[in-house]
Image 1 (cartoon, rainbow, N blue to C red):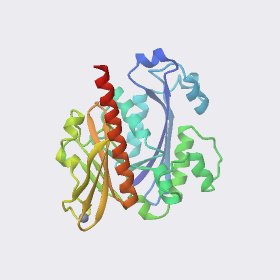
Image 2: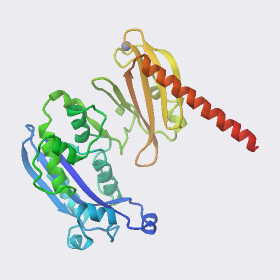
Image 3: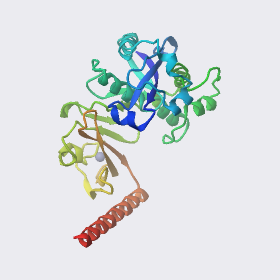
Image 4: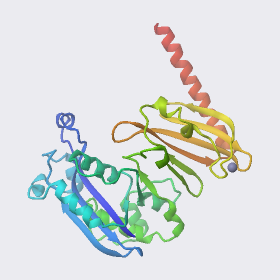
Length: 320
Ligand SMILES: [Zn+2]
């Protein structure tokens, strides 16, 4: 299996009017990638600039960051031509690796915009190297810049950052420095496209938590009444559990619950409500073991949510 370390640069509207007129928020203008073999040795690279078809002015921030002007892109090939070739170049057996979680999302958005064949009809399994760096060298939670990681690992900075080819090159260098095999069980999923049916839904058990990615629902109410979505079975032994705190939300987007398995102790689940490419609702649920202090934190959160609801009700009744 090959690792395709991918980095994209994109432009956005230079002014509000152009932004409102266009469906596409970010237009990809550069593709850079490095191919590593199964031993993470570089075997090939891909780099090409793209002629813009949506935004014909460079957004100031983008221009300053990537040091590119629109003139430089005028004689380039179109997105469709470049990305078709890039996908052919990727080959058959590979996994994408990106710094952060945006590149595959924007790639698919741009491909849809030009009605290109789908990259996948389900969530794409990939490595977020920014996350792997944090798991391998820091606390799993911090998210650093690529340059920070490069400095941290004493990688020679022989080319400038913020271009697709150089950032793909540096991301590959960071990836090569991550040695422990157990770090590589930490896959990410790009959920621009959600699981199509119930049986395609994703349940994945990591070191210390479980992740569930649901199929799409028409709306939040439908999602939050689905058995699997709100299930609090123990992910370690599949036993039924005893609810300690029923599902509650403080903002309508995040839901929490706490429950106890007779064999494995106390767990908390968090549901995040999200929207997929065609604006349907899906959820990402994470479940992990917790101790007493986490439990009390969630009790406080629930109290706070109750107070907020009370305040809102009070306000509404006054306005009547
Ligand atoms: Zn259990």
